Image (cartoon, rainbow, N blue to C red):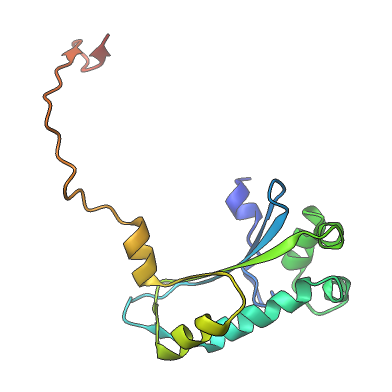
Length: 156
């Protein structure tokens, strides 16, 4: 199965966690929460952000083992076991929060982000600024010529 799909646990009782990724090089456990909106006009307040930040408390040395005996979804528990999250937290791996929404942050959410624990908080505006390509200003000034065979394959 593809790695990205293996990291997803988006089900009821997922404790606000939609995915987990372990970066062994940097010794970090990434927790993801993603909100898909049908329209960019939909604003996201601070409720989902607060819930997600609160969910990170399950991934502290004090609470991680309690998660196993909680009503957390089996998918979340499977990820915790499959990726050895208990021992990694004990070894001192840090937790990184990444919240992504296709909506936009309203005044309440922007205010909360200013005081929230460090993390990455992405809305449609930030996604657009960082991950869209307009092609403006990328003009080709040189002419390139290629020899093609009869099947339109480039010849060397």
